[in-house]
Amino acid sequence: EVQLVESGGGLVQPGRSLKLSCAASGFTFSNYGMHWIRQAPTKGLEWVASISPSGGSTYYRDSVKGRFTISRDNAKSTLYLQMDSLRSEDTATYYCATASYGGYPYWGQGVMVTVSS
Amino acid sequence: DVVMTQTPPSLSVAIGQSVSISCKSSQSLVYSDGKTYLHWLLQSPGRSPKRLIYQVSNLGSGVPDRFSGTGSQKDFTLKISRVEAEDLGVYYCAQTTHFPFTFGSGTKLEIK
Image (cartoon, rainbow over all chains, first blue to last red; front, side, top):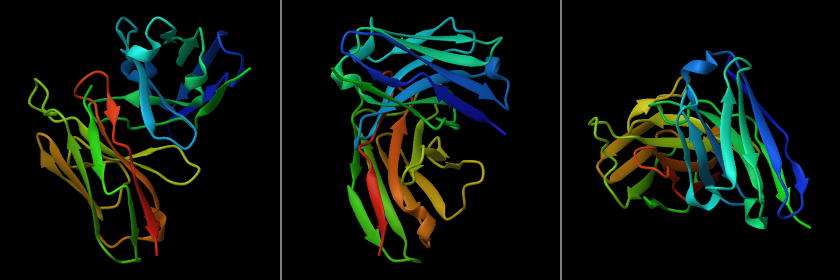
């Protein structure tokens, strides 16, 4: 059974950093690209970043470019999102999801990030 | 960015009825490989999103065949036949043809 479990969320002050993790199991992690997708409270879904299976290619939405870094450790089957210079508008539930030609087949349960002083 | 316009924003339907949700994109979603990367997701209350349909019309694993998707280029439709209580939630269309990937604003389905 495919499982994606996010961790690392919490309350953080504006301008500070936070690192999210997504532990994957039940599939060959190194064969799949991965996404981070977020959802602000009571809002819709917003794609944040993606990474290729090897980690050699990464993609970001403009609003997080230069502040967020997506990475992965295939030996540990874990995806990361390093978030620096956090802003109030980054407050959201962050989901990791598998990437494929079939869209977003699998999602984690999400982790809440609150940016507030 | 590709804008995904979903209508209606909300629906209220009785069990057993059929409904359709529209999703229109601001650009063609046909990729250079000839495939169209338009997908449909359902987010049930308090849950993570779940993929229903991928590449316009392909049913995701374990998804009932009451769900069907049609469309091409910039105009897509999700149809739910014989709505059941478990179908309530917010439906999103999503495109993964063009970066940045984008989602529709959602259609909230309520059961009468």
